[in-house]
Length: 118
Image (cartoon, rainbow, N blue to C red):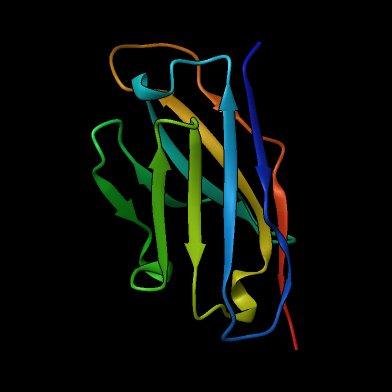
């Protein structure tokens, strides 16, 4: 059974920092590209950033220079370090896994809520 479990969300003031975690189980972590998505109230889910199985990182323009994605293959954990947070970063943040080679199932976590407010 595949599980992606996010944690680390919460309430933070504008300009603050937060680090999200995603614990993966039931998959061979090294065979998956891992990503973060987010969905703000009343908006569609959007891409935040991805780290490939080989460690190549890509980011959406709104978070470039502020967010950093990383992964730990020893603990099968994905991270998202968020700095200089803005009110518009408020959203539910989701962990996503897709196969690094060939077709296959993709997986989503249930999300963790990040609220940026003063």
